[in-house]
Image (spheres, each protein chain N blue to C red):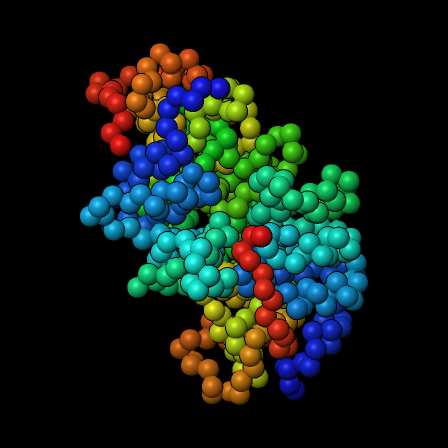
Length: 229
Length: 222
């Protein structure tokens, strides 16, 4: 069964209303823009979006604009200053979306745990802050820790540089970020890549995501996005 | 507001004096980002960016050099130094939370006399962005805060207890402001250095908790 899809629209065709979706990327780097734009086109509603950021150089703001997101889980949901319209923040103030703010390292580890079959873990991050509210606290080796639970998703939308047809992925520079861990933590992982090659053409030593985690691959154009702009 | 004290750049110069040869350093957004421009001669440090880079170089505005696949955690295009490596976010926070990062420099809204840090949320906005700050504050071996001594309206940012939502409890080791350098100790806040032309009384008047004067209190050497 081939993992290669002809279009982003076909690759995401079964993403139904209410889906929990992880989106890779940090700012614009490593954001699966072709899949995001296809999702905007498809019009899937009531999405729970898990992403480091939104509208911070990436195009997830389009999903906000279309009111497709019901809940956002991430470390950087709103900008520090409002120099430009912050669509998620406006939707939050209007009561249209729920936001869960997660420390970035806790978010990464929750996703890692979700992919690795770990039921939960204790971290010192967030102790004594609002993040600790409602969470079990435990002193381990003399240090206060919080119990955190895994994050999993129905779909992971991942951006890679190159893929082979069996789903092995290579990333480019700082585009790696959340992509490899999100690829492990979803029922179906869909990858937006710049180039697809035959098995054997990628250096096995350089593969950052082994194909076992990848269900669908679609080649798409690279977008001219600039960091956090 | 007074124009007395250090510019943002001079605050970065003072923070950079804390860099020691061989350190791995993570810089926050704002004044901390400027620290990389003022590394003392003879000191080599490795910068870690939580989005997955160890060993990035200068930020670049040179169109020929810019590659938007290579940005630091502030979203700026950067260059790479020999020996650099890339990794994913869970590995990045293994470095940070696992105390493999020697030093982080962060901005702040408030710091308490016990070293509590508040830097992620202005209460009036109702929500904020944590980013990597909570993990960095808890995990880095040393935490330096670089911030203006007061708010724009002249209210102290160094307070007895933070009124803004906390980032971490008892995490801050050292504070550099436009007026002073202050060490957080179990006994309280120790005033170590003063910016040129600034008196201890003036710093105290803009600081909520009582400052302990260091025996060797001196003018900041920049």
